[in-house]
Structure formats: C-alpha cells, structure tokens
Image (tube, rainbow, N blue to C red; front, side, top):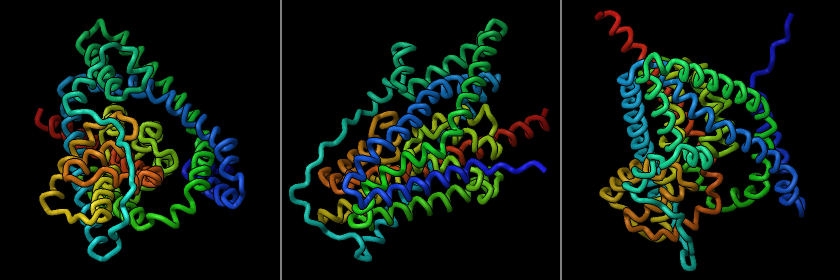
Amino acid sequence: MKKKKAPLALWIFVGLLAGIAGGLLLMPLENGLDIAKGYISPFGTIFLNLLKFIVVPIVIFSIASGVISMKDVSKVGSVGGKTVVYYVCTTAVALVIALVLASGAKSMGIFHTLQTSGLEFTPPEGQSLMTTFVNIFPANAVDPLVKANMLQVIVIALFLGFGILMAGEKGKLAGQVVDSFNEVSMKIMDTIIKLSPVGVACLICPVIVENGPNIIRDLVTVLAVAYVGYIIHAALVYSLTVRAIGGVSPLQFFKGMAPAIMMAFSSASSVGTLPFTMECSEKLGAKREVSSFVLPLGATINMDGTAIYQGVCAVFIATAFGIDLSIGQMITIVLTATLASVGTAGVPGAGLVMLTMVLQSVNIPIEGIALVAGIDRVFDMGRTAVNITGDAACAVIVSHLEDRKAVRQSRNS
C-alpha cells in the first residue's frame, strides 16, 4: 500500500511549534536574541522574499486570466460589486464586535487609566482619500511592478484583461500568453509553498525570543481582548456567511484554511500569504476566475482583523488617558475605520496609519499609540490571520452566488 503523505497543514503546524520551542530555549541565553536575529531570522526572510517575488506575477497574471475567463465585462462588474459589499459589511461588523468587547472590558475594570506623561509617538505618514484615489491609477506600467504597489498592479491586471477581451479574435494570442504565464507562476508558487514549514519556524522564533517576556508581563489584557474579538468574528461572522451564503460547512472551511491561517499568523503579511489563500480557497470550491480576482483585491483592501485592532486599541488608549467615548464617537470610529481600510491600502504599517486616523477622528491623543506600538507585531499576527480568512470566505461565497446566478440564467433562457 502507498503511504499517505502528511498534509501540508500538519507540517506547517510542526514548523510553528518548532519555532516557538526554539524561541523559548533561546530566551534565557544572554545572546539568544542575537542568535535568533543573526542566524535564524535570515532564513525566514529568504522565505518571505521568495513569496514576495512571486506575488506580483501571480496577482497580475491571475487577475488578468480571471477577467479573460469570465468572457464578459459585465460579469467582472457583478463579481466586483458582491466582493466590495461583502468586505465593507464584514469590516463594519468587526468594528462593532471590537467596540462592544473593549467597552465591556473597560466597564469590568480590565482596562485602566494609566500614567501617560512622557509618551511619544510619531505617526506614520497617511494620505488623503483623493490622493489615495489618484494613486490607484499608475503613471507607467513598470514602476508599480517594481515597488509591488498592489492597488496599481490590480488596475494594470484589470486593464490588461479588459483589453484582451475587447480585442476579440486579435486578443486570443495575448490571452493564451497570459494563461501560460499564470500557470507557470502557479507552479513556482507550489514549489515555494513546500518550503513553508521551515519558513514558518524561522519567522516565529525571533518573535518569541524578543517579545515573549513583554507579552506575558505587559499589555496582556488588551492583547487578550483583541484576540477574543478575532476569534468571535472568525467563528461567528465567517461561519454564518460561508454556511448561509457560501454553502460550505464552517468546520470544512476552517480545516481547509488551516495552512493559510498558520502562514498568515507567522508572517503577518496578507500579501505574502496570498499564494496559500488562493490554493486553500480553490480547494474549498472557489472558482479560479473568482479567487484570482477576489483574493488579490481582498489582500489589499479587506481588513476585518485590522478593524478589530482599531476598535480595541481606540477604547484602550482612550481609557488610559481617562477619556470616556460616547455612542456618537463610537459610530465615528466605525465609519472612519471602515473607510480607512480602503484609504490606507498599500501603505507600509497600514495598521498604525489606520489607528492614527481613527484616534484623530474622535480627538484621542495619538501619543497613546506608543502604548501598543511596541507589540504591534503580536497584534498583527492575529489580525492578518483574520484578514486572509475573510478574503477566502468572500471568494467561496461569491463563487457560490455566481454559480446560482448562472443556473437561474440557464433556466430562464
């Protein structure tokens, strides 16, 4: 009998445990952090570099290929509309969950007024809504690919797909070339993914060595509240939507997403996890042409986990400064963070940029970000896992809705 190969999710989990164990062993050593950063972290960086290298080809060729395979510009509009509605609605729900949990933590005395004198924080540079809108459209075709500006790469891919569709017969050769490059990119991605257990171990180990004692000693409450929010949102919102609208069992969904979730948790990069998210969602029934469009878009603008982080940290920082947030201010936080999730897309340190915008919208001192900035990486691991799970849920749901629409149209014709 043929031996059954252990699933990738198991090996990634083993890598995760090995990285955590290695970090715990290095923590007591005087030069443990130097060893982790100097000799272990570089291998994690190599793995991330390989993922980043393949992400731009995958995005540009998979989106263009997805558009071409739909064979109809109106179908692209249908998929895009459903995707944006789902992302905006789930982000707003995530914020409400976060504010309810954080307000409950405050009323129970878990969040306290802190000594905030001497706090300093220089916020990352944000950008206005109109600047963001203008910057979506590239001035040339090369620069966005070099800088991995994902919004501009998506626009280039969309125009490439639309152009090939509109060219008709003359565009067939270009369409075949795009499909061929898409297939090649996917094969390269499969090879890189096989290295993920080693990559995960090398990425998580330095995080444990550097932050372990601080995580236990400081800010454990705000971390706990945020992670409770992550779990509730994933277990409640995604379970209900994939079951009710996507026709997939929640247990089957989360089991199928396990490799991508663990990769997202280790790397804290939605874009870096994109190849995993794509593979997992397609195994769960998402059509290639839909996932090729929905997932790169979601990796750029869908930030449910980040929204939970905004809500919890806003209440925590307000409490630290002795500020009581009104219902009106909480509504403002929901609206600001929902819009900011798109407005800060593609900006490095998007979580902190969004948090700066949220705090300013309700007049909370932005210096309070210094309270949470030191362990932002730990927040980021959980929120990235939630973000990519939401992307995959959307791909499964939109695929199912498009299938039902096609069945209705065939009955009526």
